[in-house]
Length: 543
Image (cartoon, rainbow, N blue to C red):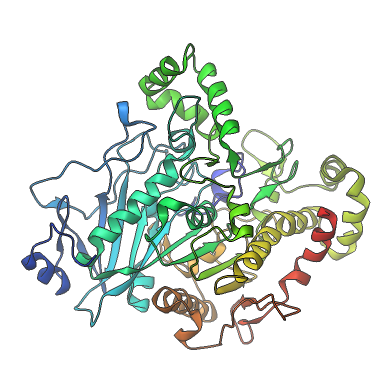
């Protein structure tokens, strides 16, 4: 869920501050026990015991792959060792290695390839739709256990699975001679989806009706998997929240001195960056020697460079083609898509843009705005200033936030929807609650609006805490859960009832339909996102 800015403080990193049929191994008795709402379910590797939580059962920390340690570091995920006794699944498993951020104190545990299952209690009339949630966090932080899916599972009568995957240098490191360079985190996600195919029936889920969903890095992962040959048949619909195949940024967008870049990088680039990382850590010599040296380093020595290698690579077995090009040419799995973004994505980074000390940052000032406008846009500066006049914004920070939101987030999400809608059903949303629950206990330093990740409160309890919603916001949350789970069940969010949700269509439609999601009367309505976010201007500027 993070705005691709490794300098953002703890308080603004999304969750931070809140912190076949049955598997061949499952015997009939266990299947009956599971279907009847029991707390013990047998997976292919052994039985797990979960716990009741009101209307749902929760199973946490279930291994889906072996610990990627020692010789398995930077290798494809392998099956875990089976266990004989019933495994306790009442507590979350370890988060993957990361620095302090979303996970207080961070994590140093590489034995982290585990997942969590939340399933309604009682006997289902038929197998339930399955939603596999991939967390955000810029590919260098986060945990599946941060997302409490009780409301989604109970209201939507769905099975929700949240997964961990390798992050940063552990998940996306590359080096010449290293097979799988830059793809380990994506392969972990495929391993988790494969586990779901083989085991989810024991939890009441339908392996033939799986929706892959995620936000920010999780949404970008969904787009990547939509173009990956190895993911074929592992899911049947996809939800991409604030994340597309073409997310990228210009100079200075999220912090001063930020270099322009795209999230997906060519394999050669990822390997060259990894070579530099290895040399900095003292691993030199031939390729085999460097890789062996890197595998021998303790986690403590890799955490300082965690964010140096966090870009998925393309031009390989996992992503043969740059994902944005795959969408453009139709080389992707032809599946229904639900996609969208928040109205004020970039207030999150702009609120801490100017540094006033080691532990204190403040919103962008007029002086900084003038400086970065010239550095970022050069000859186009005057055109951008005219499109976003100072008189239209209460501060330089809000003006810059609008520019970055439109160019970085709204534009890429909208273009992706257009490419997909030529071939598959697409339902597009625009989350626009002007005062959603805060993502931090600290008072905001500027109006945040519908900032990056703010829609997550409406779908999940975050960090073990339910959201503080007023009556209209609770109604919106119920509508959104209804939309999301109806899409998971049928491929059509509108079947949940309430305001209808037409498809996003480009052919023959001057303004493709986008559903605004906001509380209050008239909050759920059609919206012209292209006008709201100046997308025609950015399309002209890109020519």
